[in-house]
Length: 346
Image (cartoon, rainbow, N blue to C red; front, side, top):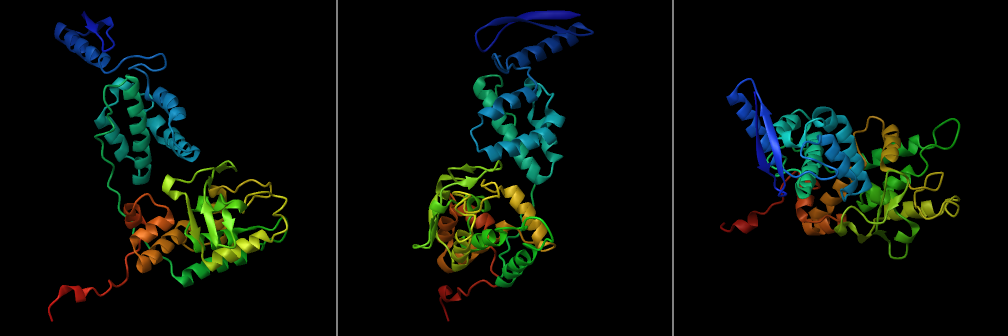
């Protein structure tokens, strides 16, 4: 049996909607469901209320105003997880429970990225009028165990450097392997800058006289450079420690500098090094030592906070607020300082 009615849509148009079923009651229920779905949004030339999620993601991602690196991360999670699991679901069938079940099947880190992508894409669909509400908003991420922030000791940092020194240039034939890795990590250690910020340094950003570097951009994953750092507060001029300044002076004295242009740490082709390729080389060099470049940034943050306070650490690292610094960049002291003089009494 089939029943139908005329429905006025949100855009003012009137359309005929049908519903069919094995009985009059079933046909009526189906008609009501179809009417409800049609009222969830208005069709556009590129998207409709019944478009699959994959279509929305294709329209949304090129328009999403984030860095190229962020788009690469979203594209990866779409291809590996969202597309295979939710890509064929129609927009008017995309519900909060369905998305929640999907997120709970992912690892915490992947779930966070997938939720960010889905939430932004659904918000885009709401603004375009093809969804009446954002079903991602009420989802919750799987509980993620917070990792303890650990600051490195001088001995750990020295051991890391010694492994780099031993590995670099240690190949029997071909071009010298690991060129510049020691200098890169000395600058990371002596500045606390983000890894991409160090790889994106230009000689115009280095002031040997004032012993400072200017953080004005970051490297991308295509051998180029983005002329703005991660956030507005990341743009800063910072003094660097002697180990970083010495490394920059060694790098400046290398014979290929004039031929390879403005990057402080160029590839053999004169392009900027990418974070992923450089981290691959560092993993090969450090062997089984469980230290990554970001650990040096946390160490710098912890040491500044211990001596000058969290505000100084936050500003030096280029964080947008002290909350970021406190939550992810400060190691807990082994022993809490003695504050008991503030208690009063005898």
